[in-house]
Structures are given as structure tokens and as C-alpha cells.
Image (cartoon, rainbow, N blue to C red):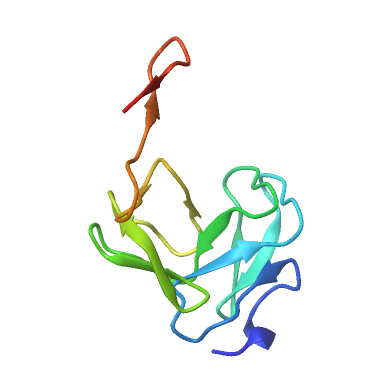
Length: 105
């Protein structure tokens, strides 16, 4: 894959990466080119967030800029948002918010 296989609103820097980074806010329903395939974004994605370049299995290492940043806690489909709902850090503690918005660690 090359950068021409991706929408210009996405950053894909390393052929090792299984995610790309959102360089411009994408609204839910936007259509983007990901790895040569046009997909519809399911939810609004802020700048700096990640989407899957290809399907990523549960427990698989996520690579960003060619470096591991964590592993998935659930299967992730191509074009799906990769964030705290399906990604855990393998390097620092992962914190979650409880029903009142307080962090649980």
C-alpha cells in the first residue's frame, strides 16, 4: 500500500501500520478511501484519532508509525475507530471512567 491508497484527510506513514491517523475531523457518514477501498465512517472522528487500515483481530498488536502502541481488546473492522473502546496500552495502565465520569484504574 502507498499513501495514494488513502484519503488525504488520513495519515498513513509506514507500510507496517495497521491503522492510519485522522488529519482532519471526519463526521459520521463521511466517505473516505482506506487502503484503496472507499468506506463510510460510522462515527465522528476527531483529529488525531485512529482508524483500522484492515481488519485487526482481538489481541493483535496495533502499529502506528511502524511502532507498537498497544493491542486490541476486541476485533476491529477495516475503517473502524481504534480507541479506548477496543485498544489497550501494553506499556502504561489503562484507565476507564465509571458511570459518574470518575477514572477507575
